[in-house]
Length: 175
Image (cartoon, rainbow, N blue to C red; front, side, top):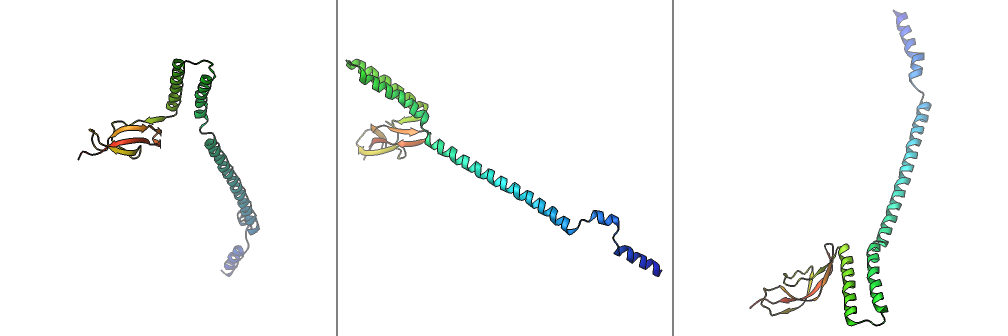
C-alpha cells in the first residue's frame, strides 16, 4: 500500500508529456496576449484615423454646401439681369416696348422665385399675423378688427420661413 501512495505522489508531481502539450508556459501566454493587444491597438488606430478622415470630409462638405448654396438661384437671377441689361441697350425704346420688356423680366424673376420656393406674402383681407406681417398703422375700417386692410410692401417667405414680413395697415376694432 505504501508503494501505491508513493507511485501516486510521483505521478502527481511529475507532469506527463500530455500535460506539457496542453498547458503553454507563462512566457508563451504573455507573447500571445501581446500579439492580440498589438492587433487591437493597430485596429483602434486605423478606426481612429478613418473617423478623423470622415469628420474632416464631412466638415469640407458642409463648408462647400454653405459656400455654394445659392449657386442655382444665382444662375436663375443671371437671366433676369441679362434681360434688364438688354433693355438698357435698346437705342430708341418706346414706352410700350419698355413696359412689355419689364413685364417679361418680372415674369422671369417670379419664375425664378417660384422655382426656389420664395413666395410673396400679400395678405390683403387676412387676419393680422405677427409672424408674417408688420403693422405700420391701425386705421378705421368696415372690416373686422385686426384684419389687414392695406399692404404697403409685400413680404416674402422661403419655404415656411418668413424672410421679410409684409408691411401692412390693420383695421381698428369698431368701438
